[in-house]
Structures are given as C-alpha cells and as structure tokens.
Amino acid sequence: MDQLEPREQERTAVKTKRSKEYYKSLRKKLNNSKYLLILFAPVLLYYLIFHYAPMFGVVIAFKDYNLFKGVLESEWVGLKYFQIFIESPDFLNLLRNTFLLGFYNFLFGFPVPIIFALLLNELKNMYFKRFVQTLSYLPHFISNVVVASMIVVFLSPSGIVNRMISYLGIEPMNWMIMPEMFRTIFVSSEIWQHMGWEAIIYLAALTSISPQLYEAADIDGAGRFAKLWYITLPGILPAIFIVGILNIGKVLEIGFEKVFLLYNPVTYETADIISTYVYRVGLVQGNYSYATAIGLFLGVISFTFLFGANYLAKRFGQESLW
Image (cartoon, rainbow, N blue to C red):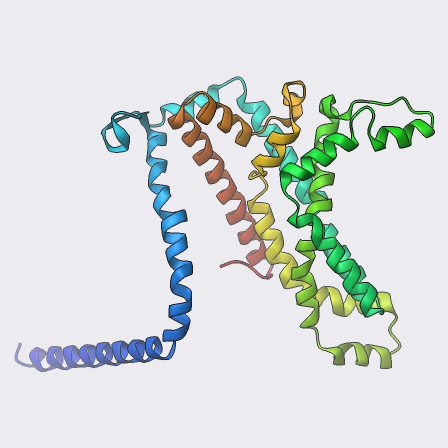
C-alpha cells in the first residue's frame, strides 16, 4: 500500500503536467488565430441563430401543436403524424415524384458542369473563354420567378417553341399541361440555369493541376484526349467526388419554388413533390405538426443518402466529407 501511493502521486503529477501543457498550447493557438476567429464569429452567429436555433421547432412534429398553447404546452402524440403520412394515399406518388425529379436532376445535371468546364479549359482564346464563362453565370442570378415566367411564355401554345415546331409540320401543343413533359422541362431548366455557376468549382480545381504535367505529356507525344484522360480528369476527381456526394444528399431536396411556380393541378400526377405537399398542408391548411413531420421525414432520408454516398466514397478510397 505504501508503494502504491508514490506511484499514484507520480501519475497525478504527470496528468497535471500534461493538462497544463494542453491548455497552454490551446491558449497559444487561440491567441495566434484570434483575427481569424473574429472574422469567423459573424458566420458562427448566423448559423447558430438562423439555422440551429430554429431546429427546436422540429419538436412539434411529435406534438399536436396548438397555436394558443404554444410549443411547450402542446400535447405529445409520438409518431402519429409520421404514421398518417406513410399511410396516406398520396405517400407513394409524392415519394416517387420527388425521387424521380431529384434523380433525373442528378443524372443529367451533375455531369454537364464537368463537361462544360473541360470544354472551357480547352479553349485557347482567353477573351472568348471569359466571355462564354461570364455568359454562363448569368442564368444563375435570374430569379426563379422570372425563369418560370420565361418557361411558361416560351412553351405556351403561341410561344416560340410551338412556332418553331410548326415550321416542321408538328401540331402546336400546350406543354405546361402535359404531365409527361414536366420532368423534362424542370430538369432542362435547372441545367441551363445552374450549369455555368456549378462549373466554377471544376474550373478552380483545373487551375491546381501543375502545367509541368502537360509539358511532360507534350514531350511524350500525348494528344489532347490523352492529356484530358490521364491528367485533367484525375486532377479534378476529388472535386467531382465531393460535389457528387453533396448532390446525392440533395436528391430529395428539390427546390420548392420552381416546382411550385411551374406545376398546376393538371400536372400533379408527375409534378407534385413532398415540398409542395408540405406547403399545402402546412401553410394553406394550417396543419403545422403534420407538415413538420413530413419535412423531418424528408430530412432523415436525405441524410441517409448523404451518409451512404460518403461511405461508398470512403470504401472505394476516394475523397469523402468525413
């Protein structure tokens, strides 16, 4: 017993010494990074106030929310609203529409910015390259309301699209009331609107590739396709994986605004998605608990997609989010 006490005292002394060294090192790091921390503080406050604090409202998904009683005083109902949604006759149609719209958007929208960035990278005339690049950014800054209005006007029975196809002898059609055309119209407009903006990430990744690799390839007699395949694509592959993982996580988070502006009761069959359904039952009908439960259900599935994509990326030894 007498021999153990000096050992215990020695261990305590070692722990105390390590603790002091750790806090000393932490204070030194904080002091060295104080200006960066000051710059970061507004961003942290923004996310805490506008993104994390409102998450407390998610609790009403498990309550029978009453405006007069408030969030805390409303009665707990457990998973009642989740069960109502899953057993709803609209559930399968909403899930299918949301998934297909997100899947087509990912399938066709994800590779286009990559191809566009690679094509821009091949342009030798810098003025023309910058002109095309700037022009491609512009649709991203156009409001969804304006974009939806343009689409409706262009695809109306007297719009430019019907005028063009009428020259080919095709009968004009009212595209906006055709349920089978809604997904094509939505995905095409998304690609056009965001292609240039999303290509910025890949253009930035292209600048990180060492020019010496291309010079060495020239000496070896490699052509443009060989340089593209063996140097350029591997150089931007980490960026492709990171953007791909993030986009998979958003497969079910289709932008509510544009779908809401483009759809109508005639196209509900293919256009009605979970977000628009949440708007109708939440804000229009005032069923806040039910709408919150649906939103939370969607968030959990999206997180599962993101987690799964990240796991697969790590499993195959590629770049991942964590």
